[in-house]
Amino acid sequence: MDGDDRFNGPDQKRSTDARQFDGLTAQPTLERDAASEAAACAPAHPDITHRSPSNGHLSSPRPFPFSSSSFPSSSSPPPSSVSHLPPLPPSFPTSPSSSNPSSNPSSNPSSNPSSSPSSNPSSNPSSNPSSNPSSNPSSNPSSSPSRSSSTPALSPSLSPPPHPGLLLPAVPANVAAAVAALKARQVIAVPTDTIYGFAADARSAEGIAHIYAIKGRDFNKPLAIAVADIADVAVYAETKHLPPALLPALLPGPVTLVLPQSPTSPIHPSLTRTVPSIAVRIPDFPFVRSLSRLLAAPLALTSANLSGRPSAIAAEEFWELWGACAAVFDGGKQGEERRRGSTIVELVERGKFRVIRAGSALPSTLATLQQFDMEEVSS
Image (cartoon, rainbow, N blue to C red; front, side, top):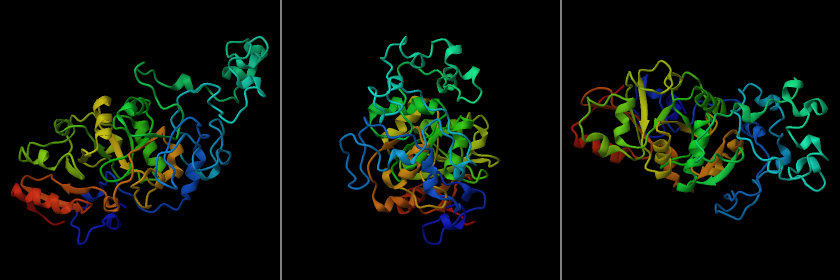
């Protein structure tokens, strides 16, 4: 909800430039069917434990809450309703057996990698290309290029999510997989201390562009960043004009600070566009902070929803967009009061602050700012 309609609190004060920031909020309404985004979903993976939207609890391995037959395979072109979106970043290659969980290896020898190469040449990519043109993309222009060829090399210690759209618990054991997806310029969905968000590597033009495409977000509206620790803020924003103890008093927590952007910031310029300020968060949520720490970079962060739609406080509330992500990390359901998102405060002038959005932590934020004799200014 950019502009006036994104402010949920009463009598909000905001500036023309600063009100563009909304690290984790919805944007202006976009006339487009939310369910059409799910057309990019890959078939469900049968070996993943996820939370059922019906009861909100983690259950035994089961398919997603929609039929995989409703969606095209990863090799199928997207439907016309989402044809305006750029292609999703290439997903990580999976084994032939996991790429189609519903197939029966015994009835389809070509889908069984353990079958004899001599009896089934099509199952062996190294077989004679001339005898099997479909196995050689270069000999068949109409065939899809290999996804693995365009996937950047990653550290062997990082195991990326095995299938796009998987719902995984937001626990320390899954931090490495999430970071692997971020390094591959993909988008993931993550929980925070307020609402769920889409995250990408803030240095990646491709990852940032894909966030905008998933949401249908106006490219002229900047994204926020999320960092791991207080010391990281000064790498990306100017903080010398602030009282030294102010940042530790406000962060981590459900607060977004709009600060002058550092001229040496390594984030990609497409994240802030031409705006000289940058919105910075340190969510009070260990999983998200661990991602930034292991990535050694900030996360580009915005709300996990279509622009103009309500923010999500539970993973199942945006299930139709799961397939547009490398993975969705489930951190449970937040309280309804958190749906208002983080409180956004502009701190670009020495000794002054401007409330851009009340969010879910305005009283405590105002109390902290007043302790440092900060003066509130109007738009």
